[in-house]
Amino acid sequence: LRELCPACFGRRDWGGDPKVNPDVHVAIDGNFTHQHYASVENDPEIVPCQNQAIWLTDTELEAARLHIAEAHEVHAAASCRQSTRIPEGSLDECEKSHKAARGRGDEAAEGVMASKGLVAMVCRHDVPLFICDITTPGEQRFYLSALLQKLSSLLLAKATIGFLYDIACLLDRSISKYNLIPEISGRLALATAAFHAYAHQFCCQIVFHPRKHVGFGMTNGEGNERIWAMSRDTIGSER
Image (tube, rainbow, N blue to C red; front, side):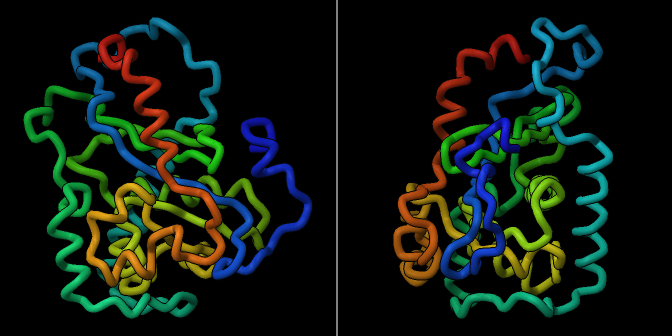
């Protein structure tokens, strides 16, 4: 991580209060245009990946998927994290207005595409940290869980994380309701990516907008969008 971004991960003092000053800021977002046909899944790479370590393995994704599934079955309340006091009605409206929250992707790609898109984690300086393929319809929560667990596994156990996501309000509710990622949730501060925040209910913006959330400074959480824009010319060759 220090090789990827010394500014974020080169610090020596860790363990800041996640509510006031989380140690690192990261953002996660998915993109459904970076797809790959199943018919050429086993073809040799045109340009070999120079840093294979940033890609999550199928084993890591499956472990995260099972964690989410088991948590839903247990339905245990989180012991280390309290949900924000946003009315359920407002959260339901946020859920209706976001495609990612509804878990929908490109249904036409089912069976045709081996990878339906990419989910990436970037730091506050827009450096890609980890990437994984989307193999399900929509951005399922286990992708977020897998990426956060991967990051946490490479940080000190006391390191705190400021995490920006398009629908952070709904993720916050899920973490508290189902006790997701309990080893991380107590060290996690959630905020909505700045540009996407205005699609949320006003009461949600007050709580999750990074400009109104102590500890996020000028981090806007839109680094993924800049990465997708810079890599748009590779979409054709990736197919």
